[in-house]
Length: 409
Image (tube, rainbow, N blue to C red):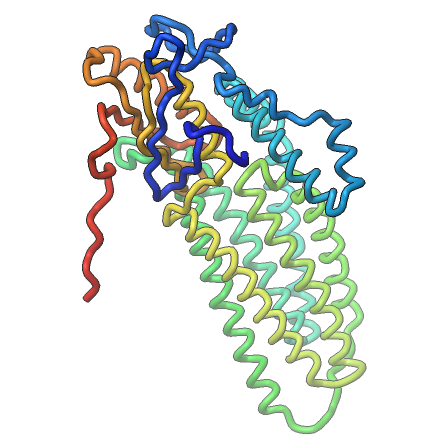
């Protein structure tokens, strides 16, 4: 939101945020009373916490007004911005229980489609691997060899993702206290490096073929190989469309979608360059293998970079940070300020750190109960792996978990 309130100003995973509660009419630090109760109020709280203390609902723009924005200059951008603002306001005002229930419902709805995407990719890749290896060996085409190697690794990708997912779910938390969510991310990085290495070998062999070739003799055109790879292309296109529709519902399906997307480029380009090497110029085939290998390396380098960001602790999206700030600030009237709010990736999910400020005279039992209840509420939010809530009585100290900067060598 543009400027919601001082209590909800911008936070990030690496900055400290001090947020003061609004002051009610009697001068006490409390959220202003607007006349309706929030179901998230802790049972130990002596008074109610309210749903919309900052009256964000007044900022919602009706659909008819949004439609009118399109007629203005650059109206589409303004309309999209305001729609995003509406979505953010509705997300902030939605109780945390609803966020959790909606996520559970989406997960349950997506369970079968995700399972179909994973197993359909696995079984199809087994069949296509054999077909494409036949095409590569029988034709002797370097371009088709590159597609065949990629098909072999497609099976490896499916098996690795499936095994790591099962391993992450069944991981012994006594040995791995943080859980197994990061295993899938580690597996994706390892697989990406393997793909890059193998395709680098294909590129080197293709360069050698270009250098050592003598004469302009065309290679023999092998129609069955072209037909086989064309069938693989059609199957991959179907898998791509299906996984594209549900890619946001599972990190496994997201990687499979990227893999199918890459295969469309690989198989399509492989057919063209292999046929071109048989009908037009001999050097089109090895050149095609070089371009396919280089393309795969670039695509997987981007994927590995994204996965490294998840493993290294990249910040959660700004919208999610705003949700955390608002929910923590309005959770209980005993919370007078928010000192620091952080959310960062630990694999595909988030670790959340929140420092709340309470009055110095607050009883220990109340400070514990409020912070524990807030932590429990946050930990069941979608994509939250773990949450940590720290209680303090002032904000003038050095930020928690912030080491002094080290001197460079």
